[in-house]
Amino acid sequence: MQFFLDTANLAEMRAAKAWGLLDGVTTNPTLMAREGGDWRAVMQAICREVEGPVSLEAVGDTADELIAMGLDLVRNGPNVVVKIPMTPEGLKAVRVLRSKGVDTNVTLVFSPMQALLAAKAGASFISPFVGRLDGLSQDGMQLVADIMAILRNYSMEARVIVASVRHPRHVAEAALMGAHVATVPFAVLRQMFDHPLTSAGLEMFNKDWAALNG
Ligand code: G3P
Picture: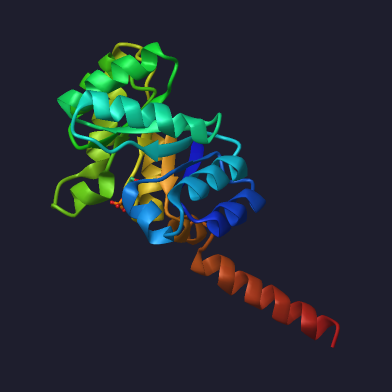
């Protein structure tokens, strides 16, 4: 399973890299806006920092606009994956970008049918947003299970990025389902290290070691 970081923050990427846990990065306009500054420079710095795929989002209403922005985004680095919204125009853009050798990540996926359409259009990655579905009292991880079953049924090549991750349990369930990637906010990645019994056990071992040497 690959771990991507869902961030545009370079310090977070460097920290994840130091743990050997940075297989790629996903960004979106919201995450880019959070960093501020010159967005082109930020994108280029991310592409230099990360060895794996870096998803940069194309914005536009028509396929032509999305294709044009996608072709511009790939100039930021050799590892760019163009994020395309799950719309009819978006899937047209996916087909064209694929024919030009550009990898795409179809985003804002909330149903199994949307995922199937994206896979058939030739998306390299598909991003179901589990946390936002949970927020509507729907079952985000069931969506991932359904998508994985469909892709396996037809041996489709698209890889699933579990996105909109809210807590480590989302990542654990994604791994149990065999999802290819989880893209996690840095806070969730940090949470994944922790267990209260680890902290309590360490505190006791340190105390006993100090007593032995006291
Ligand atoms: O980057 C896509 C996705 O992970 C966004 O998540 O937290 O805005 O629902 P969120």
